Each structure stands twice: as structure tokens, then as C-alpha cells.
Image (cartoon, rainbow, N blue to C red):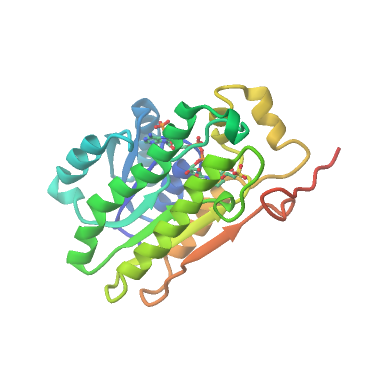
Length: 255
Ligand code: NDP
Ligand code: 8X3
């Protein structure tokens, strides 16, 4: 079903994006991998070539940079231009401060990447899907988009925005065959918390202490499932959490 289909994954240099690359490569897709850390993309592409003979096209891309997004995505080589699946995964959290004490730089980084970046990429890719009469947009939202938690404020707002954008895009694409899915994971152990705490690995580790978090492969598995349903089936929203998590604030930890 995915053999030789072109899949664009943003934020493919780590975590959920890199796992999606692996699972879609295994399923036979051709991959456009985008992120800022180009060396990571190169290493991943080499691995995928070795393991699955995957063809890749790499983009050193900061999704916050509108002109970079537009110029890179509008000048793809013709054999890479017909993107079938767009996985809008690039994103981050910064800080866990009370709103009234928060860093405005942190807020801007989250809003620029999680919301504006996702919008720039979507605006560049979806017109081609509509024109060709085929395509699927998968947005990586979060449980944080359904429920705010203390200190989550702006990150939660950005993911609530991803939820609204996904719902709105589905409505705007009604009458076309282009599908829209939003995936809302709970706790997934990736570089996410290290990035949130500006490189403080000890603090990041405590987020997952005493519980079994999701792995990035668990999330990629769900993305792959959604992308491989028959064309008349649109999975609009999936909330997946670790068994040790009930909602954004309620987790069970073994001491
Ligand atoms: P990671 O930190 O491991 O991966 C984040 C990815 O996003 C990296 O590849 C990073 O690449 C990329 N990225 C960040 N900012 C930019 C940017 N400005 N331009 C391009 N790429 C960017 O975390 P996760 O894999 O966990 O995060 C992936 C997505 O999943 C995010 O949207 C996150 O909000 C979401 N999520 C994560 C959860 C979790 O608990 N981990 C739960 C729910 C949702 P690079 O730095 O090389 O540019
Ligand atoms: C990431 C999950 O709960 O840390 O979106 O916000 S959480």
C-alpha cells in the first residue's frame, strides 16, 4: 500500500519523527526527511538505506522560517514533488514555568514551531494533494492539547491549536479525497523533556521515573496504522497514553 509512496516527515532527526521514518521505510515508502540537525538525518538515511534500501531526500529545514519552508518545499525535484503523506511532527516544548513567570523567548519558540511551522508546511504541501486528488496529513498533537497542566500553559495552547487546525483542515478538505488525522500522545520518552528543560537530563529523566512511558515506535505504529486504512476511512483523532497514565495530570508511579 505504501510501496514507493512519498512521505514527508518533519522533525525526523529524533524521537517520534525518526521512528516514523523507520516504520514507513520498512513499509516500502520513499521518504523526505526534514529537520535542522542535518547530520542526524544523514545518519538515519544511511541506516534506512542499509536496512530497507529506502530512497530518501533530505532537507535541512527550520519550520519556523517561512521563506525557507516555501523555497525548499516548492523547489523539490520533480520525482519528489508528489507527496502522498505529510507527517507534521516537528515541535517542542520549552520550560515548565508558571505563565506569569514564563520566558517570552520560550513561548515564541513553541508558537513559531508548533503552530506557525506546521501551518507553513501544510500550506505548501496540501494544494498539490488537492490538485492530484490524493493525500493524507497527519498532525502530531498531544494530550496537552486536550487538557492544560500546571506550567504547560503555552505548550498546551500550541497543541490545542494543532487540534483546532486539524479539525478545521478536515472540514476544508471535505469533498476531496485528502485525509486528515491528528495523533495525541501522552508521555513518550524521547528528547522532548531534555529540550523542554534546556538540556537538563536529570530533570528530564524524572518525568518518566517509576512509570513505563510510550516509546516513539509505539506512536509511529499508530501513525502507520492510520495511514494504511482503505481510502474511504479517515481516522480523525487518536489519543494514546501509557497504561500508567490516565490523563495529562494523573499518572501512576512505582516508588
Ligand atoms: P524530540 O525532541 O525527540 O523530537 C523533536 C523533533 O522536532 C526533532 O527532530 C527536531 O529536530 C524537530 N524540530 C524541533 N523544532 C524544529 C524546527 N524549528 N524546525 C524543524 N524541526 C524541528 O521530541 P518528540 O519526538 O517527542 O516530539 C515530536 C513531536 O511529538 C512534537 O511535536 C511534540 O510536541 C510531540 N509530542 C511529544 C510527546 C512526548 O511526550 N515526547 C507527547 C505528545 C506529543 P531538530 O532539532 O534537528 O530540528
Ligand atoms: C507531550 C506530553 O504531557 O509532557 O506533549 O505535554 S506532555
